[in-house]
Length: 254
Image (tube, rainbow, N blue to C red):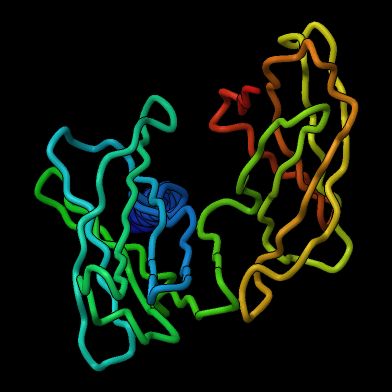
């Protein structure tokens, strides 16, 4: 009887440990709030801007997304993010922006900032979730005119355009390793045919060089082409990551 009881308790202990491990793994794989990207921008007339995008799980209709930041003056400030749109069936994109200039004098706390540290608070369904970069907070430093950091994605479109016979754009990638390939897969006829081209390294996107800016330019676009659809692949360390606009692909019009 004692032997049977020991076996039973051992089995219950195993099941309890398995359930706990499974629950922890499931929770860790889905963060309810994650930074997509952030930008720190300075221009003439004293213009300084701190902006970015955040992805949240759609846990409840009523929700609040707040950026908790310090520009290095010993104080912490809050700014609210606004709904941008869905990223897929269960996630949303929210955007935030804080800016100042010699003309409007709003948010003077960022006018002379050289570094901004921040974390993201997400409130939904009576619960509060944080993305604080694994307890370290995010940090973005002033770098030339513009500095960019990436959160969740390893590759992200920065911009694109068509002019004359040229399709051109910029892509941000995390600097995971020295050797990397950035490829643009595109169509000028709504995917009846497909073309490929490669981006080339342009410059570091921030002081720490954790993100790089890559550029592409293809001058084979016919004058009759009014629209291009495309996606971006980034291959590094034997892994390929995609930015396909959350499965919708990107579209650029002439």
